[in-house]
Image (cartoon, rainbow, N blue to C red; front, side, top):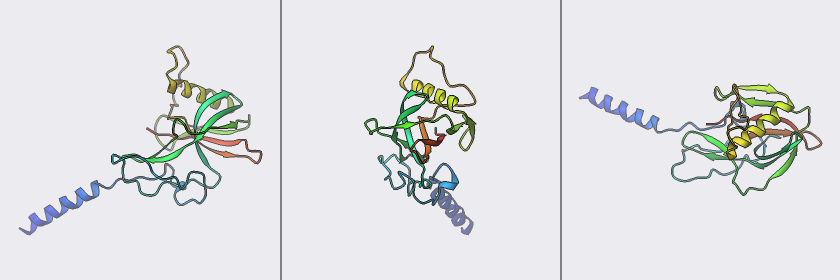
Length: 181
């Protein structure tokens, strides 16, 4: 009888632990960092959302954006991306009617694109590679014709969400594509 109670107790414990959803920021260095735009954005969504807890906090000076238009290689339009709790984790996105801002993309921008292999893997690229990538991912999102060039491996498109920092003149200093599923 004691072994049956222990067995049932163990099953109940495993069931309780299995219901816990692990949510948090994509990178471990973002936990507990102060500042950052969008850090205090509330979680949104309905009952299908996971129990993600407190929204992730970005490091000071970092902003996450959803690029909405690539005017040319010298700049883009983007809306602030906010964290949203999903059944799997926090993801970033922007409402379709969110206001956009123009961002200047200088030739010396420090750029990293997410690799399609999974989270936490990036490759340093130059200005022209970044601009081409953004253009192709935007085209893919709106359903460009089949003859429009596609993003090629080892890269992929992940919702056009990027984390940026700005230089003293307000231009994009660094840009890092955010991987998501």
